[in-house]
Image (cartoon, rainbow, N blue to C red):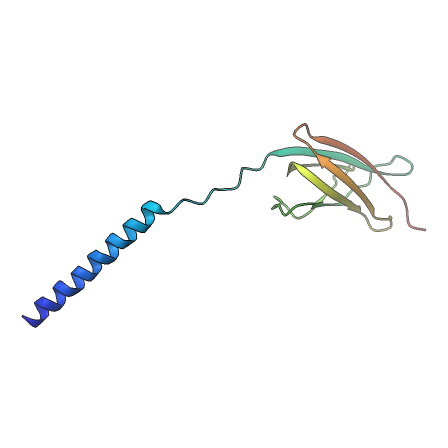
Length: 124
């Protein structure tokens, strides 16, 4: 008899808890998700002052606002070219290669995409 009363008590408490949770969820508003980011193609070529392509130059975009980038950094290919799908927005693009001065450019990547031509100067 005692165990039956205890089990009824716990079942009653459980039902009250479930009803209370249901009532709160019906008045609770779902959080709004941030809008999906639009991506665009940033491409370019990195050369030296003689117009020769620079292979394996590091490309590092620093977004103006906190956005997650698909990759941390990239490098140019053997022809000095790079392509990168990035979220639309403002960036500071930093290009570096050992033996050359670091180049920094500010860009506003739009939905149309952008092509950059970067000339690195040799260190003296």
